[in-house]
Amino acid sequence: MPRACDSCSVRKIKCNGRTPCQACVASSLPCSRLRARKKSGPKGPRKRTKEVIIEIQQTQRQGQNEQQPRDSSLGGPVSTLTSLSGHSTSSPAGESENNALDRRNIGHQPGRRISLSSFSRYLTIYHSQLFVVWPVIDKDELLLRLGDADDKVAYALAASICAATMAQLHLVDENEGCLYQSMVYEAEKTRFMLDYSKYQTTDALLTSFFLHVLYSNIGNITKSTLLLREAITYAHIMGIHQDIFYSDLHPDIAQHHLHIAWILFITDRAHALQHDIPSTFKPSPTLPELRPSQNSELGQAFCILCRLFQSFDDACPRDIRSEHNGLLGTISTQLRRTQAFPFCDNEVQRADIVVTDSWLRVVLWKAAIPYVDATTDPNDQSLSVSFPISVARDLLAKLTTLSSCALEAHGPGMMSKLFEVASSVADVIICAPNLADVGSVHVRPREILCALSSLITSLKTTGDPALLTLLREKMMACALIGPGQLMQITDISEDLESQEDSW
Image (cartoon, rainbow, N blue to C red):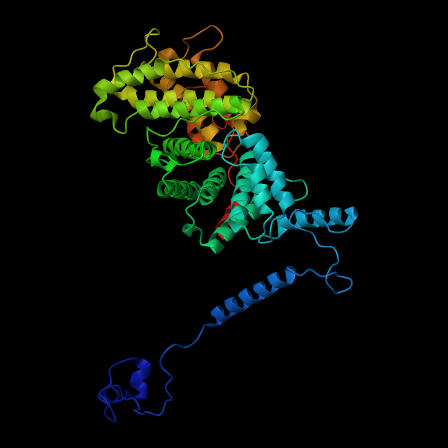
């Protein structure tokens, strides 16, 4: 095939190969074939690609240099090294200086390996304050594994737990500021380097779960949902939702996996209800019995919480309209029941149980009330229009024994549950104004709504700002407040969002 002339080649039009060609004659252009043609095929990396490659090489060289730290004054290798545990191999003074330097750098240099001393600090906080919420991690065993620098899986898991703990409890170090950005960066980076999808283990499952907690706390609901689904998928692949999985396990190991399964079940149900998405995790009804742990108080409270969600799941069908005639009776019985909760010294667990119980009863009521003839009969509270008011009144009485810290330990999920109860009370007052002032001399429905609203706005926890906006609008409709009187939930800062996008 004849080569196109220079003019046709530049203009990228068809050339008939003659001299002069038809296109050049028609356009009155010179027709020549003198221009040197570029070689066909790959042209090599672009300028920006070369720059990225150079940056990666520089980062790798820098990482290699950091593995052999040098004394700044002598230019040679330092004589006293700081181990993962933060302990110096020389004098105590050197140990203190190295630990302080290590802690300062964690907050300001994402990508620097986190020291064992920092892990120990926040895993201890998790164990003392949040183990009752997520009783699935043995702190001492994990710290022992972190002593092995090659155990990357343990490193990613520990970083995700610490990040979730910091975000859930709003921990801020006076010198370092908020450190969970570094923790979550390390967890995500290590998972990526490990190609984590290859590991169908409880460590991989729990890493995904705690990252779900972290992103839920900072308001990234899409990512938190995907991570929760990822943890559930690990559980399905491993089979911990089926009884056959436990047939040959040691009883203690079986109980540990049962804790994980029930935590996933509870979290999946709560997340689905709060964000209006389908739930996906359903344990087999023939799973081995979940037994209280050696600490009977903590174990018993966790078992009660699991039974609450199981009772809710049994009473509330996926499509109540398809067979509501027989099921409304079951729901009515569930709403009427009075749960005899044992006394629990741990107020974090007590807060979880009493608020979750009230929340689930209101959710059940909302599912059933469209299909019954609602009444205001005080003797038939279960499926009456005034049911949320009685639930909220009982809840407030129980909350008087709890501190705000016990509620805040449960993160944005607790605020969402309290909002659901308060919102239902507001709906009743709006739809049935004659009930607004009915009640005891001291606590009327309007006062109950105001008390719940004040409690919600006082919690120091990150939540969905749209919930308080909606609650404010409902209170204005109830003529309880004027514009701008209800406090706003603290939203995610722009700095945090930009850092999150960079991950």
